Image 1: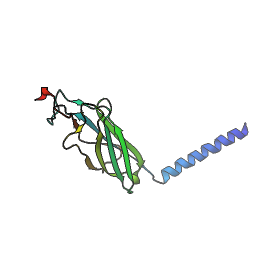
Image 2: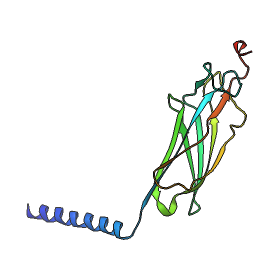
Image 3: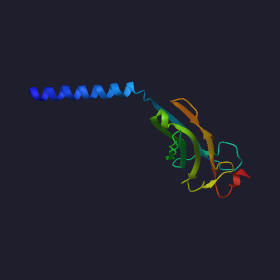
Image 4: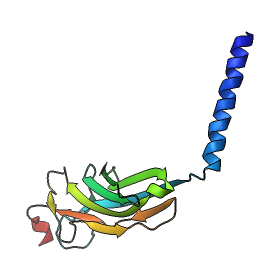
Length: 150
């Protein structure tokens, strides 16, 4: 029993030392987030109306370069509300410097053509930790406009 208590005491001491070194070294974590939405513009009129709907399962890629020069590639899919989110926690010295968000594909069978101006969004990421950066909405359109839109 004494050997187990000594082992537990030693493990607790080592954990305390690791935590102490972490705080003394000044390593700070940084968290960033990019989010946006993907919509089907049914009438292709570049305005959101009652006939339009969000796209669930649309794929979006976010490519970021860090302050240290590392390139990170993220893949996200929209939820039932048409929203996607990419988030990362890393050391402050490795935080995102700039990112490019771009739509990859829509799996909705009636809305697969990428709308004008939806090719991608470049952004400089100079925000503090915990900030969520919104990206403008990406739009897909049907191959042909339904007759009720004309």
